[in-house]
Image (cartoon, rainbow, N blue to C red; front, side, top):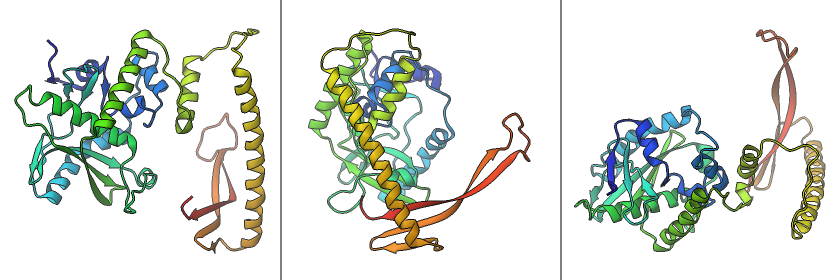
Length: 326
């Protein structure tokens, strides 16, 4: 019988145990709301692409988990203990659904809860959606991660004679200067979507068939993944595409024309703003701030040379519009 909760001796064995499943941190990718597209995630899960070395940002994020949980403990006035590292929880019914919680189950006046810590950059935090109360709310990939963790822990805990969490707290250190946290209650509708889309995705992995493209904000990730999937083109090859692709080809050409026109419009409007600013570095335009500041561009004088004095510095003014809601 598969162990529902197991702590592994090191990261390598823990990563190996995660293969064949979808971790809570990856479910957003699978659902098309993560940092990567379902197609890019599929490349990794089918062994077509290898995860690179841990980045400095990832390393700092892992190191900051304990600090974030300590801050949460102080804010709530209850102990929020870090969970043992390299511990994997597996759903008893949906074995592909796995999670590695940041914290042990903690206890507050309104019931037991789990906690997820995030070290969030200011720029990424600024892109988060705003709720009806005018305050920032976690993005969908974080919501999905917390919902999957809740679902796994609430399914496993009774079988392991542990107290299940009633809810999750997502705690975030923002830009190294602010601390925020949100309560995430179980949402059966979201969990049903996680199960539905997770099972569809795992079938794609098992059958070695790429998942459907989702487009939108994932289009760039999908484009990179397609380059990885098809790195070569057979010279002088020509295939007949299905009839419906004629409309797609036409739409692509028309989108290109609109893109070209939009770039020209942007430059024309930019020039009117540059003319209005003149020698000024910035100006106010109602709720917007328009700036036209000098920036430096560094490039090599000679690409065959590397010394420090082989640097050409050029200055240019870049226009930028900030403020407003769009």
